[in-house]
Amino acid sequence: MTLPPEFLSGLATRLGEIDAELARHYPGDRPGQPIHTAYVCAADATKELPDQWGASAGELAERHTALLTELAGADVLARVRNTLAHGPIQDLRLDFEDGYGSRGDEVEDRDAGRAGQILAALPAAVRSRGIRIKGLTGAEWQRAVRTLERVLDGAGGVPDGFVFTVPKLRSVEQVGIAVRLCEEMELAHGLPSDALRFELQIESPQAVIAADGSATVARAIHRSAGRCSGLHYGTYDYSAACGISPQFQSLEHPIADHAKAVMQAAAAQTGVWVCDGSTQVMPVGGEGEVAAAVARHFRLVTRSLERGYYQGWDMHPGHLVTRWAATFAFFRGALGAAAPRIDRYLRRQGGAVVDEPATAQALATVVLRGLDCGAFGPEDVTALAPAATVEVLTQLRERKLPTR
Image (cartoon, rainbow, N blue to C red):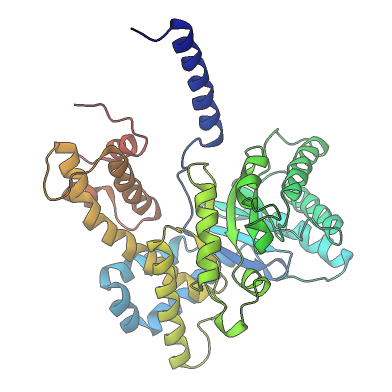
């Protein structure tokens, strides 16, 4: 006996529809994620800010060479110094929300126009740039919209890599409003369709779990019409909203781990990046205080990377030192573990660990992330895995490598 042809035909049709729906909702990971977002009060920003932060970070690195060498190694520190000199900031956000406050419409209008000019003038090394507006809430939405418009006017359009951050997310309906705002802004300002993108800041428990028990953040991604580029965790607002005492609020508190794990699962394979939050501990004060802050931030960045959060907030020039040092050290360590396994996979050899295509994809992805941020070069990869060129690694990541 065989199954009826009409059943098999119906099954094929339905499975095809399901596959198409999954492909629409989960197009896959998006390469090019920056390692950090530097947050700066919009009132304090200038177009020279990347160079100023890089110089300040370089001075801190010089003062604490011994500690940084102990944490990351001399080779990594040399790469950090070069990066601080030539491209210290990958992603910059000029803040018009909590870090800016309420300064009156006249002042904020002026700062918004100037912010647009600054964003348009930033060097190409700043691959992503934008602003954090005030929240789309009943009390602040008018000022938020007005600031966004004046920034775009000041920039003369949408700067390359522009994105705006929507804070205080508590309802999926706010995402629908953000989408509508983008559409109307594009029409009113003569911008190309789909030119505007936004990030959602997750700093409220209602952004993680809704009143009906569903994951708000998952619904928010799929409500964004493809305009949501990232989810950013708000360390202190979220912890405070969950009732965590201030002395225990941090990136590594269990309440933070839970929120970020939900964000990570919701964003997986959607092309939406997950960004960790900030630490409020700055590398300032006496030498002992600075050294402790440096070691702490290095540990926190490493911890986030180990958990798959490849981007985080930096609030001070000194954070750039440990951001780059921890990131380079992490990916160089990942290369040492991944490259031999990739080599065995490409040679179809066994060994103690036999990897499947999905694992090979993950191995290639972490190596490509390391290449993208500058932790090592292509020659370092092929020295360990001769066939693992960038082209081959990209094919592995996209699972397009021909079967041998």
